[in-house]
Image 1 (cartoon, one colour):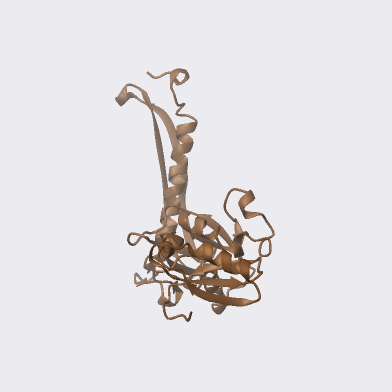
Image 2: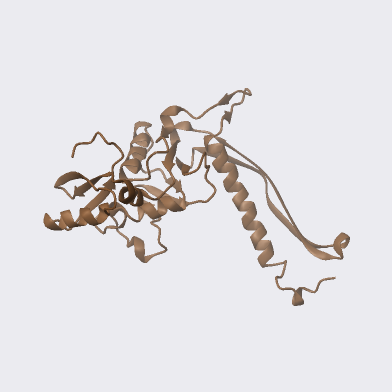
Length: 262
């Protein structure tokens, strides 16, 4: 028989809490899976998420334009701007967002994004949530989600239940058992947007390696588009151009459309 006083981990505390967190991650998986899966109707038929509620094609990273496009989609669907909305992204999206002037600049934010926990909790009308459990269709691809509380229904028939007891079949060692009964389904398609993003977080690195078009946006003064050649740092080049123009506030965007003018 094990003595909890001599065990490295008390099964009645830390291990039990870890088990509880694992169960809550299972709830996350249920909700995330239901967000884009075919929704089961009352008559037994299924309804796939509509193409109109899908933004992106896995070629572009998260950007200010992507976020405003998602907001536009909610407006087109007559979703009240006052309704609480969440935007679930991955770690690379969080990193990319912290490189956006619109996220970190005091001109756009009432809080200091980099002085807190390294993530902006509220921006552009969304509560931002980082998750490592989003769907990954293929390498360097990620299905991010933006939705309201009404978008997905979660049925909890039996909430998380846990028991910690000695098991006589394994020399009375402590054993933890957890179970729950839940189910989720997409309820309101118009209140959910699937955002297909590139999950690379390497726009600057790609530009330095291959030479991509870069858009330098001057605040309230328009923008210029230039090409940073291979081996050149596009962000350093943009900073130099802004300095020459006497502009202190500017943002840099890596362009993927080669048809844009120089």
